Image (cartoon, rainbow, N blue to C red; front, side, top):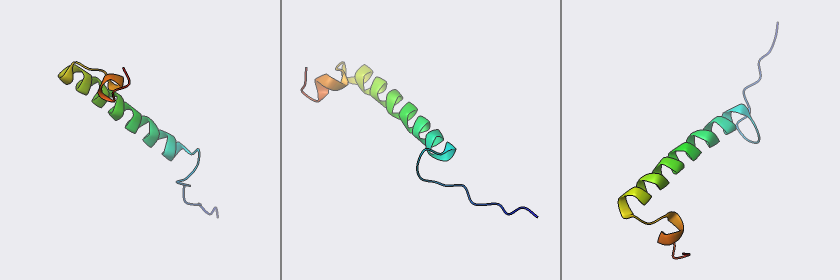
Length: 49
């Protein structure tokens, strides 16, 4: 009989990388929407340009 170990949630695991990718996509879309709505890029809004 095989024993199954629970999937690790920390470190470079499949679970962590999937969530990292999802959150990166949400952040990218949010940045594009903010730039479209305000007419300024992220650096402009931060006062760096």
